[in-house]
Image (cartoon, rainbow, N blue to C red; front, side, top):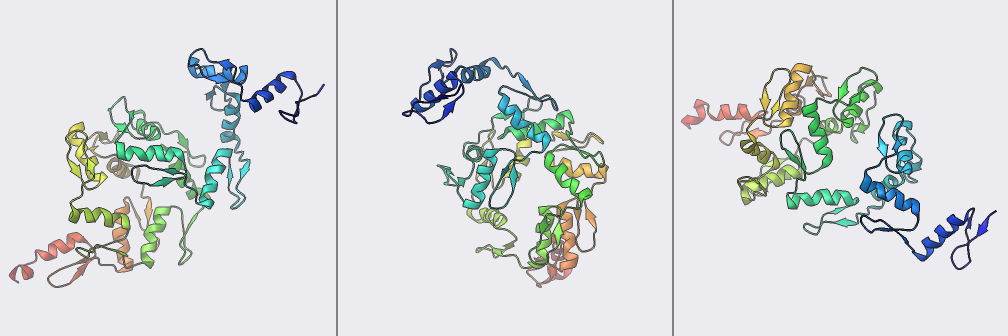
Length: 368
């Protein structure tokens, strides 16, 4: 028999008396059930029971696909959308779909421009609260996640998890077509475009499409031969504002990145990372094929392409492929005829900095 809630509380109907009482507590903000561990209060016994699993570690709900466990049944139901592909939440503006309602709410800030979270140090704003927390570690230098194997520390837990795969050799992401495996899901996603033919990045000048955003950026240099960012001190030009800002520290003397071990300071994070190897024992990344070691992970990743024959960077003009992005960038100058290095003596230009250096040392200039 249905029961009607009192008019001063709610007009909803409840099928059972316990639901009626629960509704009344929502309206009156009663929380009569108390956790005997942390003294947190709850409106009903079920909520208290779920909360206690925080202390006991109990996770009674198991996914029958991947065996991941959860403390709350609703969390398991939401997780199962990962396997089913269900995306029930749709953006009214762009029709993009999401597995979770909160992801849709966060996405909608792309359209509204809302960035409600502000850093109280530099006033940078964020659309997601967690992004602000991560950003604040730039100012605090906090690196709370440590590797148990090599003691390297990380700002984010997901960075530590990715790093651990270097030690375990785990490649959890698997291509269903060619069986190639990957450490990161994003790498698998990009790789699958080889099979699907998907090219989601389009040049707004010539409509040429690309499988990776980085390839589009390289291609855009064909259209924008003149770099737009110029140093007002030495007139050196750069392709992005980011590189100009780093360069300007040569003139200002600013060195914002400090080594925690010896207090040496550096103009950019790459230089700091290279220096940190002095304290950590030098080369810490080892190739599992030839045992060659490297100070930086990215250098190891590039080296491993020697063994895998992977050449991920492709010239859009002549289809020549390269192991490193920098090699592709230099090669593109063959097609664009860009010669960014100029001799101060004779104004002759060169496509490579190394060729300019050899030219400067030429006998004709020494005699002048």
